[in-house]
Amino acid sequence: MDAAVANEIIAAEVVSDAVAKAYGLVPDEAALIRRGFNDTYRLDANGERRVARVYLAGKYYLHDNDDIRFELDMLSHLGTRGVPVSVPLPRRDGELLGTVTDASGAARPFALFTWAEGDTVEGHVHPETPVNFGRSLAQVHVEADTFDSPYSRYRLDASYLVDQPERLMAGKFAAQADERFESYRGLFAEMRAFLATQPNDLPAFGYLHGDPHGRNAHADKQGSVTLFDFDHGGFGWRAYDVLTAMASVPEDRRGDFLESYRSVRPSFTGDEATLLRWLPIRMVWDIGDMLAMAPVMGNDFNPPLDEGVQFLDRVKERWQNAGP
Image (cartoon, rainbow, N blue to C red):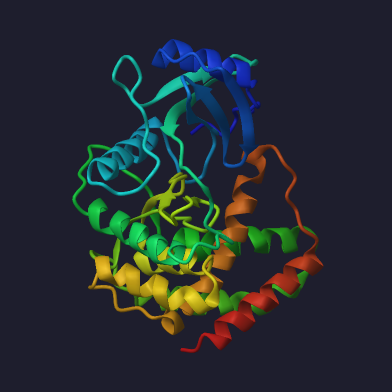
């Protein structure tokens, strides 16, 4: 997508009007929830709540609108297979993706989704939440394997998990003639070597949520879990997805989470100890993701180098503690 687009925040009223025109819904109320890697809006119409997503242009992991169409078609497929996910709603013309124009005249892709009821899984106290979280994620992985699409989606492989954060962090240090990053090159090399040993085909490597932390899933009053925000969805190692979700579950409930996940996907053999190997990889991906997206989001994310060293020390400690 075009990185030159300014990605102005569009007024909620403009998004509301676009929804009324495209979907035949007249929202009673519309509000911007937040700017993240997309702009997300809450829309209330006819006694029902929905969410509109206006996609940011210039993302490193999306090339064009067909990448978005893959995501929307995948979610529709998962929904028809009974997987608890927030699904896109069809427009009056039958399409799932449209555009909305910002104040500068730039057209931005946007889509409307069902609302995920409840509160974020992270910190949710219902005793069934960890169990249902594991089951929901496993359903995504299982049913995604039955999906076929004319569109493509990126691979969340070593180039994004390790190479990009290494390159971007090294650039920050080099820009200030600070050589401290060089002592961490071996850490990134070890991570690459680990990933090179991982299977790169089904069922271990396939479509995944990409960022299923506890704030991208809601649990209702009965502990039922709905996953949403598949913006980072792509093809990668399912163990990475499982670790990311598991890390949002209280430590004393992680066994329940994994047992529930395996009840749906018994071919998965990972346990809590082996999954922790993925945690430092997740940590460096996260910082690389934020560095890559900062100019797209229009912010100046640029942590001090001393903080970068402290972060890398924590990553290194986690990596070493996770074992060979």
